[in-house]
Amino acid sequence: MAEALGRETTNYMEQPQEISLTINSPYFSTYQSIRTISRQNYLQQLRMRLHTLLTSVEGEGSTEFNDMILRNNGRELHGVVSKLTSESDYFVEIVSDKEGSRRVRRLFGKFHQTDEILLNAIVRRFIDIMTGKYSYLVAITAFKVSESFELVSLTLRDALYFASDEIGCIALNQIITESNNIFRYEFFHEISENADWLSMDDSGNFVVQHVLNFHDLECTNRVAFRLCGYYVELSFERRGSYIVEQILESGSMIALDLVVSELMECGGFTLWRLAQDAFGNYVVQKALRVTRRQGRVDLFFGLVKKLKLLPFLHLLRGSHHGRNIVAIIDSTITLEFAKERRVDLFRELVEKLKPLIDLLRGYQGINIAAIIDLDKIEGVD
Image (cartoon, rainbow, N blue to C red; front, side):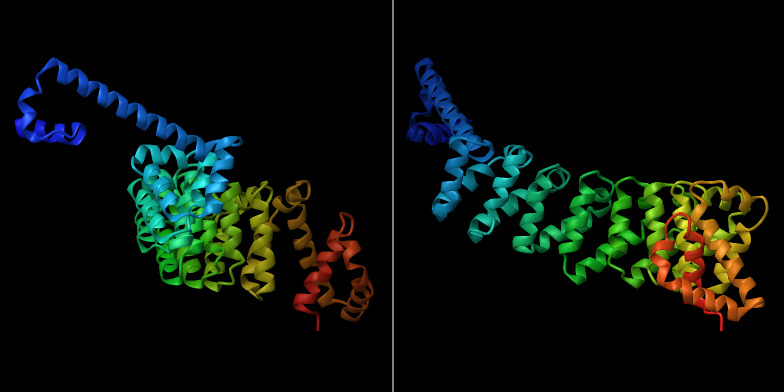
């Protein structure tokens, strides 16, 4: 005990170890308390000055920070960064501030040593920083500057946690974008293997959409298989319908089969509800247009047959959201009739109307435009 106290005396009082026996003296205790309070006051003032330097929107702190950046003095920046990162809680407090986050980001890319100090501070509180409204931008900047293997490894380790967090999902998407192909495929695998519950999650949904935007066929097919049994449910939701539309547009024939087959198997009443739903109608339109464009006649007419069942088609005609679907169905019926009767007259009329196609796409001419569009794809020869 005496030795431990003697070491404390040496640190703060710069006294030899032998005087440790006088430590119980009231005078010594008072002197030590004064020195401790003075040191605490000094550190508090130093921290307040640093806080002003890094977070003040205008005034002396803002000007002083800009001048420091312009001087680009390694020793000066090292001192600021060292003080900033000396305590993890204080570092998180600064980078969680809007202006503090912006200024800490400006400290990156100046000197390798200061970058390493900041990077280590981020790693110590990685989850807190990656899920903060402004602090996550500091982590993204650190990754862009350093291309740190450790940062991307930590992100991959906690990818599902970040994916389900309101801010973390944004940070995760940016890390995926900035990653090289090797790590990006690791992220693709992790997200696609959990696409079912992530697609149902408000935050995770954005991450699934993000990985699908890379148009990686293997990832798309994995997501498509993972979502089997959920396509109808997702189509009724705003964000969920975006994912279903992305899969339909992906160019994957496997994914197209999976989605449209599930739509056809859901039953006439459910398909009608979907077709006149505020979000679901876009999924049905997309399914009809993509199957027609891809020449998947079996899927296209399978959907049309379901939608033509009475009384569903009649009810769709009176539905605001089902109007475009009815136009596609009517164009199919009209085109089939034209093929069976006077192909020559049909062709002549279509050719005359083609120059007016843009005008016809208005409300009154939408059905005529749909017939012409269908003729371009299928032909009547």
